Image (cartoon, helix red, strand yellow):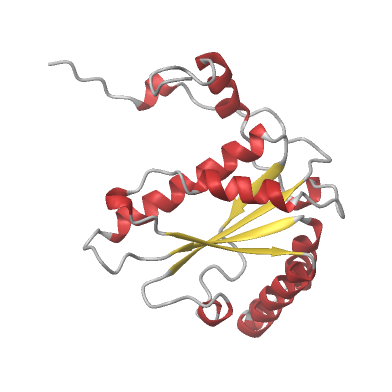
Length: 201
């Protein structure tokens, strides 16, 4: 039996997992191929193991799949049409209507504020962001594709009713999921030493 100090995966394997994480967008998905729901539950379970101050677990997930994707697509496209005014673009409307249907599942990410503690909102935003990173890494491990979007109705006041948001809740975007048809290109990062200040004294 392994102990807490024993490595489950090698550092090299873990480094490779993190550095292979990519955002994969709806046009890159295999349209019509659905991820098993049990895998989605595993992604959400991994998300729930994110660090969170005072164990408030401030995340809530609403999962859309099947006809639920059509419902989500119709809502965001209609809201864009109603609120865009003179800035309306047919191509953007079509994209909002079509992109969700290219995904297997879409997870709405909701920050549900703790009502029993005085934790600053920033700490709970950080906790939910960590949960999303757990989803990202899990997607990579399963050989799937996905990305976190803060577009569509993320900041639309009408989303509160559609997503049954309670007082204090915050919609933090959507995680699109699918099987990869077209892989993303290799990632590039600036040297971390250029962004680090090291203090020893």
